Image (cartoon, rainbow, N blue to C red; front, side, top):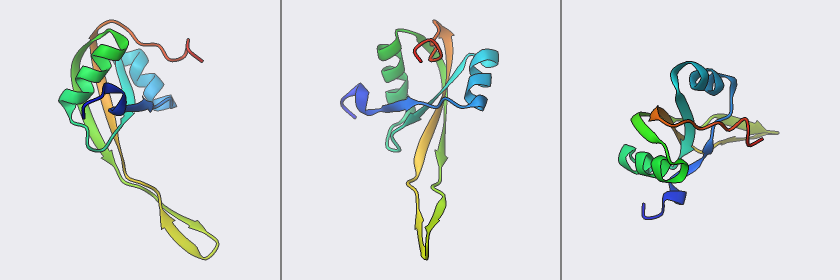
Length: 95
């Protein structure tokens, strides 16, 4: 990935993600499936001006969906749990 804006797709603003952010200083992002931990770390540090301690990634499989008699599937995607050592990101203030 050449552009850091291609790596991060956006934050995951769920109850679980909010709890992780408050208790463990972990931020959850939705990232491109091809992105690796080094690219994610560089993108977060450059975009938000924070220091990243560690990153854990999880590949999420798409769910089966049904519309009438047709059965389809949503896309597979990747989630990154970013632990911060310095700095803070608060998405609640942005909303």
